[in-house]
Image (cartoon, rainbow, N blue to C red):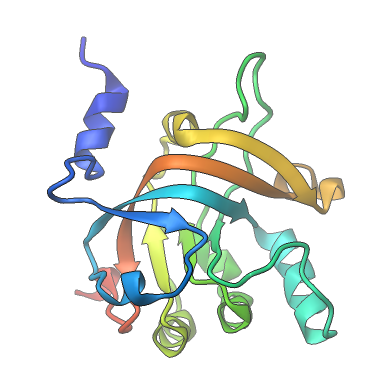
Length: 193
């Protein structure tokens, strides 16, 4: 029987000749400018989680001129609500959620400095325009593979809104987390090609 992790690794671009590794948080955005739709990327470093309710709170804080619970400059947001961790694991299943639910808030967060968002599914024309304006990208992760994707997460800690349960904001440390560029920093959209 084949190891499913090694199979998705190949499919997601762990071949060093094909994948582009991004180290998070980004120190600038030159790396993002070279990405094109369809490129396979591997993310290593720190990323933050945020879903619907967390996005509402983050956007409200920005509108009110308040600081966010983390510095958004060069950061990545993963649209995920992880399940509870089983004993001996750092996190439960951590698959992407439908990104369009965050579309009303995403441009505000890109304007604040977020450079990468990760989810599944297409985005609105406003999000595409915001990616282009801010030199940001939208990545897709494999839906339905939450248990497998959790193996790329090396630590997880709640940093804000614990009252939201799985929708709290977590700081994740990831290594070679696989994703594909769906919207690049030039505004090209894989879903419309």
